Length: 244
Image (cartoon, rainbow, N blue to C red):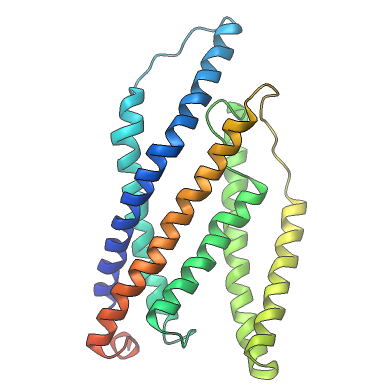
């Protein structure tokens, strides 16, 4: 059963990847082109020699983008199905569609939205190459802390529900999560390496497009996988017996 759900998760990731690629190619690549043009103009104004193009821009925006998006989406879809297999029937009494939707929303908030508040996506020409290692570490640290905090909040909510009820437990745990994440966002060092003359419009559009890509990914996973899982579980009569 778990292996069957894994295949369905990867299929949902495949469908999500196609939608994400279409969105990114249409709305994201023009912003990348604008950022690259700014970077080249700045280098030319500074008298720096142009760097050789190892991979053509057309390949990057086409086959390269498609390959990267599809590989990421399918992998995330597989992980999503494993999370569903663990949660459904154990931590959630919702229907398969409901469980899938809740996992998708929670993952989007913890993995995408919260880290983006502190360290939003940046296009080419934004950021000091010497600090890329530190910036990457801080970004992934933010993801790990946010995800771990969300899991802790779920555990806290279940424990509080036994004494104060489901809704009260969820509210208290949610507030605890927000307070802790707020403190983490405040304590982690900020990063502001946007050039003064960089287009604010390009930066804004790039960041909103990045969020849009992730929103499409997680929304598609939550909806499509929920449908596929519900059909499978309806045939087998449930998930938990298959996991014993």
